[in-house]
Amino acid sequence: MAVSRKYFGTDGIRGRVGEAPITADFMLKLGWAVGKVLGSSTCDKVLIGKDTRISGYMFESALEAGLSAAGMDIRLLGPMPTPAIAYLTRTLHACAGIVISASHNPYADNGIKFFSAQGTKLPDEVEREIERMLDEPMVTVDSSQLGKAVRVHDAEGRYIEFCKSTVPLSLSLHGLKIVLDCANGATYKVAPAVFDEMDAEVISIGVEPDGLNINEDCGSTKPKNLQAAVLEHGADLGIALDGDGDRVAMVDHTGQLLDGDELLYIIARSRHQAGMLRGGVVGTVMSNLGLEHALKRDGIELKRAAVGDRYVLEMLVQEGWVLGGESSGHIICMDRTATGDGIVSALQVVTEMIKSNKRLAELREGMHKYPQHMINVPVSGRVNLKEHAPIQAAVQASEARLAGRGRVLLRPSGTEPVVRVMVEGEDEAQVRQEAAELAEVVQRLLNTTAA
Image (cartoon, rainbow, N blue to C red; front, side):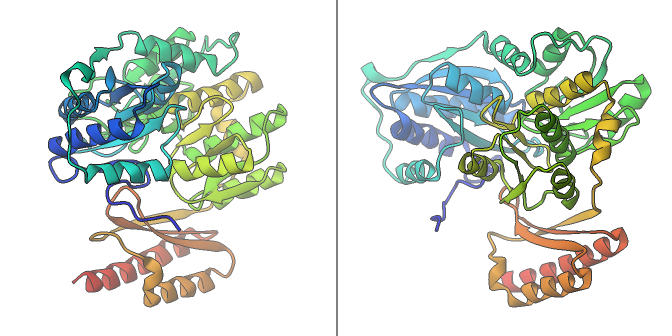
């Protein structure tokens, strides 16, 4: 059984800026702890990248100071997508990569994510060792051993070339009009460059970050402006990335949104038809039943992991498979890269459009999504839903009413103080009613317990 961690959640450390642990003094100590745990006689280099939120300046400096105090050299990447930092950690032979980002959260939040020397998330035991070191006194190395910081000036170009390398060299996007929403986040420079260099006509929105507008009414979590822009410009498709660039949503020429499940289906079917899909596909407990049924029809197995890209990745490695993802648009193509990458995932879909000579609306037709409704119920602190018998009884009653024509899922979020109540089924009205009733039960019982 996994040991509970004090600071690390399912996706690094995240919270509101100025509230523990998302403070400058904590980041100083965190940088030192990471240096002590991951540094060695053969590797003393750590990369730091960030998204565009204003607090990134403060935390970048604090982490830099802590790492230097531990004797680590630092390579500063500036605003770069999370998957770019994973890629560059590997190719620049660093012993770790640090991302300062709260992904799709608003600017007032921030967080820290880590990558290993292989460009993958840190194992649980390493995160626990970092937490243990945080309790130790901070001792600075001798001045002769302090780390130095250098800015990497060609980071953007390296990553742009990598993204283009994940599709055939001969592939041209000439004639495609694409609206690209970069969420005023980390992809605001590199994403337009990738598609422009591949000869698409690119209309960019969400590319004017000011430190405060990241994810504000834009990006993959709020795609209405993108949908409107696709229709306004008569574009062939739209691509929406989130604040740190590891998630993607897409819009077809009619303005209809495609989420991660639909994009995963398109990529999986393309790989399968080309004989390039090794094994099946890993989704999560939140993946739509329609994805499972569509893949099964094509002879592709779906296995469900817990929510969180680290768990999708763990199951992919365990099964020896190469493709997995989440409904949120966090898609992992392990035959292309080691982590979820919004730009790379979008390129795989666009490649299938070109290869099949089909529009996005046609490629999605093979999958019928079941109505799914989710309500986030605010909670105080961590909760164990299995300990609440009345909540479990309410879930069982709801499942009985669905009578095998749907499913119910309750789970605490790993990144926000909420319990996610999700109901899925054939009848949308029933789905919404069941979700509302369950959410009311959760709110009432957990608030009573908290009081």
